Length: 352
Image (cartoon, rainbow, N blue to C red):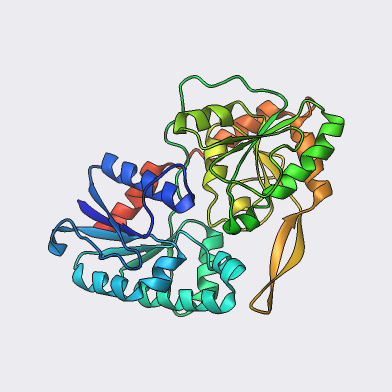
């Protein structure tokens, strides 16, 4: 099967969730025997199709909100020319668009997505939360199919020794990192170190977050290779990810696959992966207000006391950490990118 994978992003493990999704899908689809062409669809760039349109057996559209906001005509032209079965993969929630750009822009994005979706055979979302988000914004559109994303496909045979005082988190900087709430974790570390002075937090990723890199117990590692990232996650007592908006939670799933419990906010899709005190800990959210275009929007933040308590709890030698780690692996045993790719292939081939 020859598949066109169309996005305004490029496959990359070091960048955001959509880029990582694209990379994992290219590899999994290829491993399944498909030939995949990654096609860039971005503003002011001509869409270059490497093969005649009729050569494709299926197409997957998986871009961020700007692709639908700026390339609606190009998408509609592609869906018209590609006569093969097509999937619109929703890899971002409209809630996130509203959080940063306001509800009017989110509504326009939803309208473009719904319009594009009418020309495709299937719409796919990665979680029940994403399904609810889609239905809230695109009420008259085709009902999506839920196909979860995968976990980690490159689990090493031998892993680093766990360091009892180490925590890790994913750093993403810039104006689109506010919902990640990483500053709350950095702030909580000061309280944690009053009880456990040896506690450390490693920040992995390209992000240049506003939190001070010199905060006590916080080390910014920066961008690392895939293998180094796995090694660091495997060396930690827990992954800390208090994001308020996640369509799925790739870093959560990857950490659980590696047997690293997750401390996360009880919001969005995260509770579908993390079960409190079984494979991780869920932090109580506090509702704050964010104003975009004069409209009040909710901003879920981790309760400081709950966050600090959770970090101390997961670091405590009295916590049944081994049980939690084993439960983490078991909880995501059905998640794999191969299974995700097979679900897409079944839809495209009409065998679902």
